[in-house]
Length: 107
Image (cartoon, rainbow, N blue to C red; front, side, top):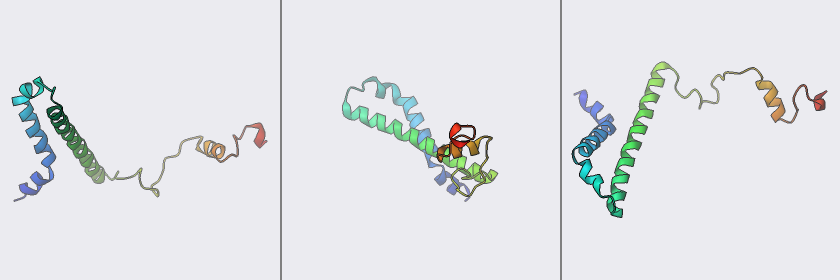
């Protein structure tokens, strides 16, 4: 079946749906008393893990979309064509110690 690989690939969505369902059903009781350090650490870790799973899944989907649109890794590729802005040469020369073209040191 074609559905099984999709479900395996989207397991973070399933984990977040389970987390949402459990917190909707039992969250009031679970969050009523967080005075125990172990319970607080468990709930906090669980929610933090769910947030990270969601964030990484969004990034994975964004990268897949970028590949489809031909925008993948443009900024990470050192050989990619860079957009230049007016004045870039002036700034680079200044950084290299050659000064600004209108400065007294370069006249």
